[in-house]
Length: 403
Image (tube, rainbow, N blue to C red; front, top):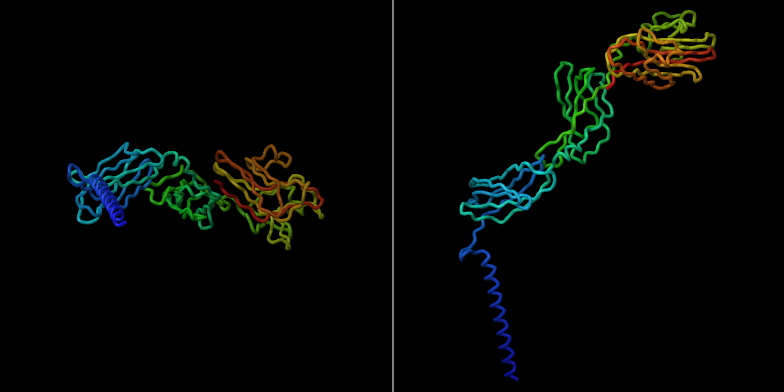
């Protein structure tokens, strides 16, 4: 029995010695990877904090040289080493920065690899990263922020109200270029978080340009812009062209409840209250109103007209009319605009007016029209009223130039 135990111990010892020998050979083989012709391979310090920043058909590659003062150059490879650039590095005693632009890249994802070298040609381990390049495909898909309305306020500022907008493509804001009241060209930037934007001292009757600014990601080196749009501003030009616009409407002469409105042309059919008509100053009304009425002792109005005449430049316009109570159909009541020094007769409105709409009660009626050149126009109200208790009431009017 002792002899057998000794044999077992001898066999175990041989196995252990063999394993140690194999491990020693393995470690020696690993070490051989770091020597060349018997000398140890020297690695230079690698680049730290590598960053790839996106741009327009380009990227910026950056990083830090920190620990190794012997780094003399670095090589940047991209797209699986299909292209590269070598840069000289001048090290100082502290931390030095690499910052290099690579241009002429196609739109899409790209891989990058950076290796540093010392004066002896020793190199570092590779530092790898990837980045995205933006190009014409991205740029062509950028939308301008939608405008819901643009209107001059009482202080003469253009107030832009923005519509809903998806900002996930990187929209940051809008740049507006306009002419102010001093005939100066002014630019205003509005961040995308604004729901309304004010353009101070806006010159009425002019248009502004605007475009939306995009930064595709927070570290991008290039700013992108949508195509520019040209926009007009709705401007209240009532005071320039319309006299006695209400409220209240003023009378040039009066016979009590009924009068003739100042500065408005009123034809004979409207003056059916003893030579007066066109203005109703009834005490139950909130204010004196432009009006035609037939019935309750007043004769019919076969071809009534109340209007003003003036010349407007080429452009788009809106005539807004606030009404009170009005009799219902089948009476004929129009807000109309026509070229020339008067409105057409009621039966010819459909063929001779530039535009017309039927008067609706208790609302703001909007008549829109466009002129291609400076034109004398007449604008106002027309009606054919039977003497059966028919009427309309207008409490104020406004004229706007439109975008």
